[in-house]
Image (tube, rainbow, N blue to C red; front, top):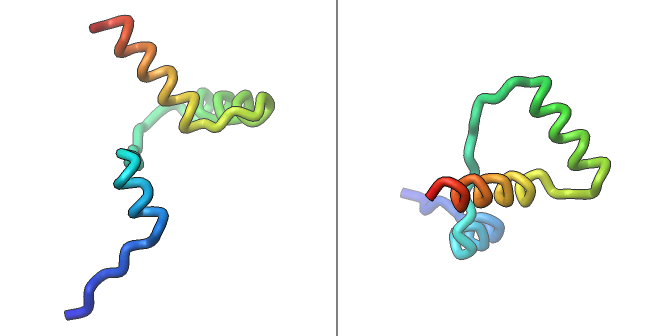
Length: 60
């Protein structure tokens, strides 16, 4: 059986503790969020992580 090759990006993600998540959100909200992040030069994933961490900190 052939071993599945792991992409370098996948190795980096695993080492850095990164994972892809899928959530259902209203399209209008997601589109506005994406547009604002793009206008301000902010990576969507980084901003989502900040918002999630802020929520965790406020509620623990």
